[in-house]
Image 1 (cartoon, protein in one colour):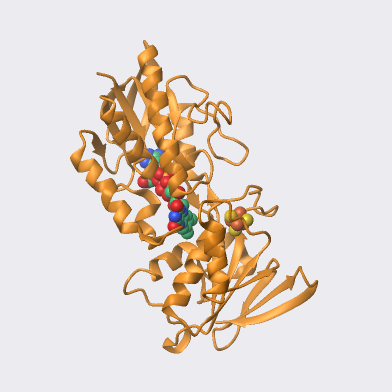
Image 2 (image 1 turned 90 degrees about the horizontal axis):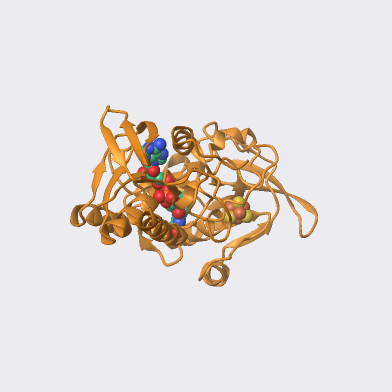
Amino acid sequence: MKHIVIIGGGIAGIETASALTDAGHWVTVIEKDAQVGGKLNNWSYLFPDFTPAENLAGSLVQKCSEKDFSVLHQTEVHSIQRQNGKFNITTSDEHQLEADAVVVATGYDLFDARRKEEYGYKIYDHVITSADLEQLLLPGGDLTVAAGKNPKRIAFVHCVGSRDEKTGNHYCSKVCCITGVKQAIELKKRLPEAEIYCFYMDLRMYGKHFEELYREAQEKYDIQFIRGRLSEASEKIDKSLLIKSEDTLSGRPLKMNVDLLVLLVGMEAGKGTANAAATCGIGCEESGFLKTTDSFLKSNFSEQEGIFLAGSCTAPMTINDTILHARSAAMEVDCWLKKQ
Ligand SMILES: Cc1cc2nc3c(=O)[nH]c(=O)nc-3n(C[C@H](O)[C@H](O)[C@H](O)COP(=O)(O)OP(=O)(O)OC[C@H]3O[C@@H](n4cnc5c(N)ncnc54)[C@H](O)[C@@H]3O)c2cc1C
Ligand code: SF4
């Protein structure tokens, strides 16, 4: 029986572990946090169909208990040495593991919105990120703003920390346009009186049901989409926010007073992925995401033989794409091991 070590126990890691166990392999997942599931544990309802995130998180936990693979929680890989075709792995708590193949599934980090000072995140009370809003959309989440009132006017800003010269993140984070649509609809369901505006550069509704959801947002929920990049936000004495933008379709400058500003933060490769890349001796792209051997037929292969890649450590992706990428990683590992 071959032993595979997977670094990262998010959706990608657990899905790869599950598929490799089904294929008859012995699998160990190394997860730095106390629980599996990764970012999914922080989300409320999922696009495109508003499935509660806890349902999916629950099925990952169930896979861990029902299937015969082990998860080492609160553990990281300290070093990996290659010897006689095997990987000798030392963990942060000084366990030694011997593996025939390794899968890196370390996911992404959220863009730190404080880096866009002009929007006032962590400076002004009612500027939050899309990740913060996910928490507020959970049952019992408090959506009130100044003086305990519900926000009457809410604005979303797209592309915060993505497609942005200043932060050096030139790529599109792929999931934030549709996350904005999902969250705007959720807000409108809770606060039917609120006016909601989304400030975008381009709208990228490429996925299955995304365009339909965007249409529904406009037609059924009266959410307004304004083409324009926000230049700055400032806080007024009553804690509402004055935002400045340009409506790039009409060419006119635009000022608006809002009660809540939501920054749709992008995905970055992150520290966990950088650490795993350094320990495994594998390369990163300019964006920081892990380099795959080619973009078509080898999207699960790293530059090191026997070390495979799964999920959003390679590029921003939705949960659906993460699951597909993880399953293909499992298939590639299985085929590679059979050839050894
Ligand atoms: C605000 C927001 C809302 C979203 N909503 C949706 C949605 O509604 N629907 C949807 O399809 N997608 C959504 N997404 C995208 C979704 O979060 C990702 O597709 C998914 O989390 C990718 O899973 P992953 O396993 O690749 O990465 P992650 O979720 O990042 O998991 C990585 C795991 O690896 C662990 N790890 C990292 N480094 C190490 C290390 N060095 N050693 C050990 N363990 C490590 C982490 O602790 C984590 O458990 C949203 C994204 C954002 C930003
Ligand atoms: S998905 Fe939309 S909001 Fe996110 S970076 Fe791409 S264009 Fe911007």
